[in-house]
Amino acid sequence: MIRREFIKTISAAAAYSTLGTRLAASSISQSTPTQRALIFDAMGEIREVYPRALVKEILESGLNAITVTLCDPKTFEHEAFEAAKNGVLHYDRLIEKQSDLYMKATKVSHIDRARRDGRLAIFYLFQNSTQFGRDLDLVDLFYGLGANMETMADVANASTVPIIVSHTACEAIYSNTRNTTDKNLRLVADKGGVIGICQIRPFVTNVRKGAFGHYLNHIEHAIKVAGVDHISIGSDRDHRVIEMTDEYIAELKREEGNNFDASHWPLFMDKLNGPRRMEVIWDGLRKRGLSEGELDKVMGLNNYRIYKEVIG
Image 1 (cartoon, rainbow, N blue to C red):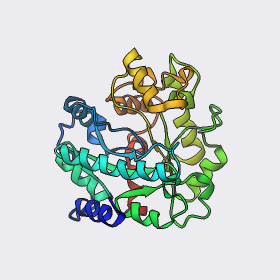
Image 2 (tube, helix red, strand yellow):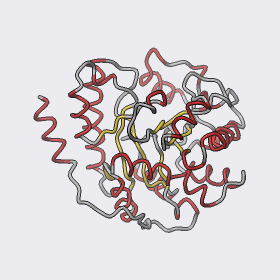
Image 3 (cartoon, rainbow, N blue to C red):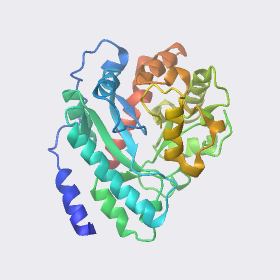
Image 4 (cartoon, one colour):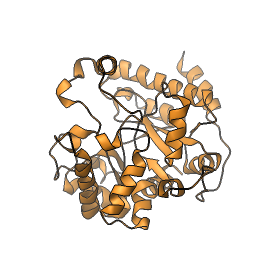
């Protein structure tokens, strides 16, 4: 498909009516704190293989919005461009096929609409710029298709708008090349940005049993350093209940290729292994002393605020 046809096809599918930005109440029965609050995952997974029952459980747990990555960040140049293009088409097809469960989101009013309908709002993002190669015109192409390009904290000073570090953890709590220093946490916050704390266990701790407590330590530390107005959840995780079976390991090897390292698995934390993890996090942070207002911010309102400020 040539570029012009590609843009025309996807742009036509991305049109939506404009709604107010007031937070709307979910149509799902509101019996738990996460069902009453707005819950927004800064970066997570939605997979085509999810059965409807799983998606409904995700919604019942309170999740209202999620941002998904469009291509493997380990691809480059033309391969990355093709993967990114196919990623847009893949998610567009998935959302259209299950439009009673999902809604493509390009602005925060779509979250309000999805909440009202009892659907999950899905935003698109890239984790890096490899899909653009050396052609900066491709930035405009993908922006027009509903993808929002994100950068790390070292560009905060150059940015004229707040930035989001969608999924990371705290270098001061556990050293990992994917984690963020206190200096950069403060820098992002000082510019009005938001940092999502991820749930990839090897980024959070080398402990396998009891890892959830370490995860809460990262959130608490990030709040202490950057402030409660600048921390959110960016899970980077699957919603299925994962069992390390031979079949699942084979799936991992297909996805990861040469990057598969058995010593890193499982990536999940036991208490967050499944579709209701946002409820577990809410309860864990409440027990750590966060107020309901602070929980509202960390679990969704901070992401909502920065999306509203940056993309409208």
